[in-house]
Image (cartoon, rainbow, N blue to C red):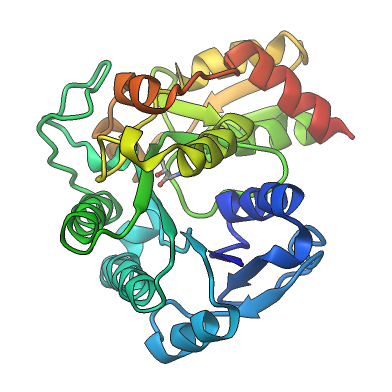
Length: 311
Ligand code: VAH
């Protein structure tokens, strides 16, 4: 059995769909802190879970005897700044509970998402390498950096096969993002179609690494299927994605919706978070270790998003 913890979130929803298509509905247990009416999630087994409740998690593992765990439950960057202690507690202790239970139940593989948020103001801003100075100044960012250290520690010390990706900002049409700084790049599509305009909370020239959800999910499954001996990184793999600014995304949308207008908010706390992150990422290690090859660029991502959201 595979258990996806945090199944109702932006990544979790798509992971559950793809893993069930691959392994069968009954083999993939979706789980989250509250139920959902999303038919994608309710197409197969669902369990309520609270990652901060170790007993609750123990019974989930005991009942389903998982061979793989995907832990997606987390508090993201923007909400993390509003609730710093909860973000640290949930992001850190949720991970440690899963790592401990994975050892206890001899889980074969664990996936845990990191983020480009692990980089900070003194990290190189362009083509940020796999190894460099990392001084993240968001609670979310340093909880992900510490989480990477825990993942590598459990691999080295206990041989736990835990694998991770530093996701860029993710853009998809099947699920909503929750509380991130990159969420503008999803919202803009909904607003463009519904109202023909969008007010961006990030400035026009804020370049960030982004990735289409199809690529992100495929990368996740390809990493999890790669032979263990090929993986030289047990903290978390850089993944490059597509770097663009709100202005560039707006121009691409206007190719499809000529009347679309973007405007920019005067101030938003998420700007400071975005300004501390890289503009672009180098993912040579993912390419060399497990043959990562990205498929979507800004043009075909925009076309695919609009086509699917119009339906
Ligand atoms: C966030 N979507 O904005 C997440 C992600 C790189 C960004 O970690 O917090």
